[in-house]
Amino acid sequence: MTVTAQAIPMLSDNYAWLLVDSVSGKTGIVDPAEAAPAVAALEALGKRLDYIFLTHHHDDHIGGVAELVAAYRPQVVGNGADAQRLPKLDISVHEGSLVEFGSARLRVIETPGHTLGHISYYIADGGILLPGDTLFSLGCGRLFEGTPAQMFNAIAKYGDLPDDTLVCAGHEYTASNAKFALSVEPGNAALQARAAEVQALRAAGKPTLPVKLGQERATNPFLRAPDEESFAKLRAAKDNF
Image: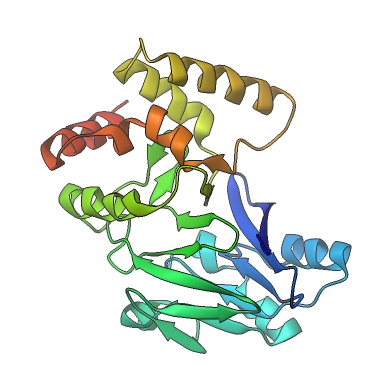
């Protein structure tokens, strides 16, 4: 595996992700909400910034782009169909696009639901999924623009990814998601163990991400929903939890 992903905490509960390709030394940052933490992470590694990868247009995922572009002149990558709501794109992508990143490539997966223009990135050479606000540990994103059916189908697109894929999501929501998940499946032993792990990690001031996709398949009620109707009921219940 040549690509690694490091969580960079931003704002109150956001994560940007610092990607490094060990072969070429290329670096990328996914969804920088603010510039300063990204700059600090880059400087700690003695790196410049080559790419910014965007999943969607919300301010808490693009707020640091302008400052980072001014400082490093990276290539900005995002959904061409949503370009009017994103910072200026150097590389416009769509479903199935492969973005060269040093010795690796990022595969683009269109995942509308949270927003209509939302995309995810998958890096096979690293086993990394960057779902933005589509999938969280033990949860999924709110439906600000899309329908439950769109979000159900978006998450289903992760179905062909291996269980050991690392889910590098956009927010530290796991503890609150665990409470809802336990209300749905109180007898799920894997979920009980994950909830205890999350509590211990947060008590130690550590992130709960990344998490393996296989673990999410065993514990995340939204990944476990069998059909669109069940998913819609879950999402409505979570919104009012």
